[in-house]
Image (cartoon, rainbow, N blue to C red; front, side, top):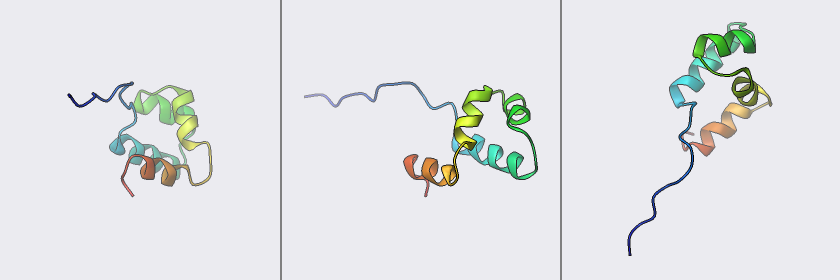
Amino acid sequence: MQAKKMGGRRKKVTEKVLEEMKNLREAGASQKEIADKLNLSYVTVSRYLGGAGFFEKVKRKMGLG
C-alpha cells in the first residue's frame, strides 16, 4: 500500500514572510502597505494580522513554536 500524498494548496505565507509581516506591522506599516511590499493580497494580510495572538496560533499550526 502506498503512502498518500499530501493534498491541497501550498502555503503562500512562509515563516520568513510571516516574520517580515510581523516586523513591518510593529514598525507601524498599515495592512495595505504590508500587502504591497510583500506582494500579498490585502485579505491575506488582514487574516494573519486580524486577531490578538494570531501569530502564535499560526506558528503552532505550522509546527514552529
